Length: 78
Image (cartoon, rainbow, N blue to C red; front, side, top):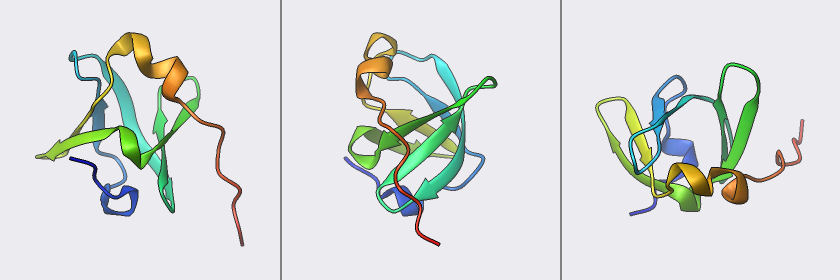
């Protein structure tokens, strides 16, 4: 089940489907969201969201799929 990025609470913890913690949701812009990894942010489209429960977002991606599924930051309109 895909979750709308705009429904993701900033600061919720993000995990892969195989249980690795990626960081926390940092920003949300339209259908895109960023996950802070400590060194940098990684952006994803909301299509990779799986389950949101008790402040934990589980992606429908395994750890080895993260790099291939990340996207460039969306253009920001002010």
